[in-house]
Image 1 (tube, rainbow, N blue to C red):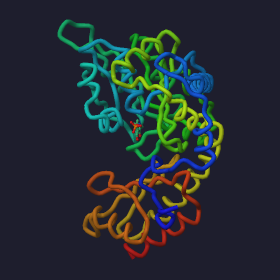
Image 2 (cartoon, helix red, strand yellow; image 1 turned 90 degrees about the vertical axis):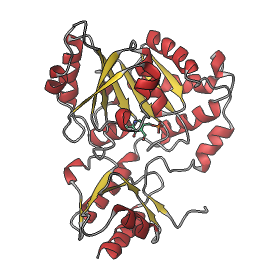
Image 3 (cartoon, helix red, strand yellow; image 1 turned 90 degrees about the horizontal axis):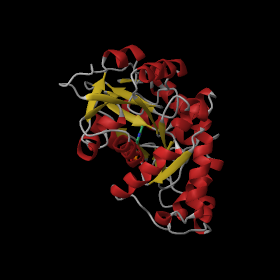
Length: 346
Ligand SMILES: Cc1ncc(COP(=O)(O)O)c(C=O)c1O
């Protein structure tokens, strides 16, 4: 491995497919998926739909495409989508709801990534000729920018009843729903049952090189399949990628508990080092956000000095960095990372 001296904690997307995953990819039976002829893609879609308790699933290249295909398919131009201020859809999807779907994004205040049902209800527009139509509620679980926080299931249920009362579409950006499931023991299909659509990623903590799925009713997914084509996401012999996704689902979900233990270890040991703090309450899955006192050190300097010791993390705001232990991270890596941080802040 060319990079075996680097402990890469920037994201759970930096993992490389294992030899076993690559073998599954090489051996995949494939066909033209735009014709619906790829048996491995069909199998992946069936597995994901079944795990989430939905009628159907659609394989797409990325989490962004899964969210955006959903928003386009579930709305009309000029509608609005309610999301938390810090969510991925607002911060990292290049204004796609506006550009691709003519949607107004209505950012709502959240508490560590969690929006209350009361906040949702207070922000639904009146049915009035002047107002955009509030059409969609999009939640994120786990919540990336909040540090991997997990939506309490009761809050999801309360939000769902508000949404149903007002005929709103419930979408879950579940890029890391696997992590919420492993951390809480709550079944994937239980989480998904509150939503019309759920997107999940295979290329994050599960370690596949590419791929996400959007799940929902068979009727909705048929429409979404057309939207995927519109967005340029129709792929051909893509079973080689779906095979990696199937491998990831079969082998890499339960082990997420290790990532959570590693995240906890990092958080507890980095918190309280000179100039550093971690809100331990937010460390509920595989993400650790470290606040750096700007009077002690800049984020750029922290990242550079750590990289010089073979440990990578990523800037997450002007005074924050993010560490994400992943499939390629061992407990020993975390001990080395803590020691390296101690050297630079000590
Ligand atoms: C919560 C969340 N949703 C969606 C995405 C988008 O995934 P992709 O990078 O595959 O487009 C990400 C990516 O990190 C994410 O963290």
